[in-house]
Image (tube, rainbow, N blue to C red; front, side, top):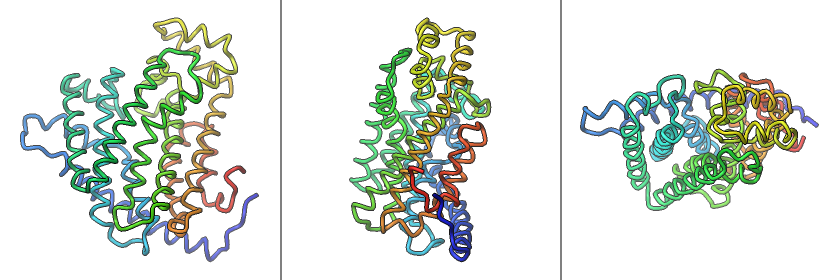
Length: 361
C-alpha cells in the first residue's frame, strides 16, 4: 500500500532536495581537493600513476555516502560541511582507489572505467606499489582524524581482505552457496560503505545508536551496490569493463548461483570445465539470462535498499532528512537501473512515491 504525500510536504521536500543536491555538488569539489592533497608526494617522476588513478576516480560513491550521512545528522541543510567530514570522505576514497589497484592486478584487468587500468598502463609492479602508497596515505589521513578512526580504517581494510580471500577460496566453484557469496560481499564491498556512512558523525557528537543506524544504512547499501554491479557484469556493455569478466575469472556471483540452483544440469558442466572458453562463457551468460536469476538477484538488492532506508528513516536523529537522502539515492540507483530492465524496480524502492511504503511491499 502506498501512502499519499501532502502537497505542502512534497513541495518542502522538493526544495530541500534541490538544496542538498547543490550542497553535495560543492562538497564533492572539496573532497576532490582534499583527495589530491592527501595523496600528493614530492617526486614528480613517480607522480604519473598516482595522478592517473586519482584524477579519474569515478562517481565518488563512497565520499557521497559520507556526505549524505552527515546531512542526515545536520540541524540545518546547506550549512558548510565540517572540514573533518570532507577529510574523512577523502580518506575513504583513498582506500577504495588503493584496493582497485590491487584488484586489477589480481584479475589482470586491462580496463578500468573504460580506459587502461594502472597495471595495463604502467605495469604490475608500479600498480602494486601505487596501491601500497595509497594505503599508507589513507592510514596517515585516518590517524589525523583520531585514534578511533585509524582503528576503524585498519579494521575495514582487514575485513575487505578477508572478504576478498573468501571469494578467492571459491573460484571456479559451481557449487558456491548464497551464504558464502554474502559473507564475501559483506567484507570486500559492504564493509567500506559501512565505514563511509559512519564517517558522517565527524561533524559533531552523535549518540551510539545513531551511528549504528548509519552503519546499517551503509552496509545494506553496500550489499545492494555489489549485487547491482554483479548483475551489470553479466548484462551490460556500458560498465567500462569486459562483459562477463567475473565468470571468466571464476567468480560466480549471485545471479550465477541462482541460475545453477534452477538449471544445474546445464550450468554445472559448463562451469566445471576449465579454462572457460569464450563459447562456453556465452552459453553460461545466456543460461543465466533465461533462468530468471537476474530478476531474482535484483529483488534481493531491492530488499537491501529498502532495509538501508528503513535504518535511517526509523531513527530520531536521522529521520527528518531521510526523505531527501532517499531522493539523492534515487539518482545513484538510476545510473544502474538505466542499464538493465531488471534493475528498474530499484527506482521504485528509492523514489518519492515509495515514501510511506513498507519495505516488504
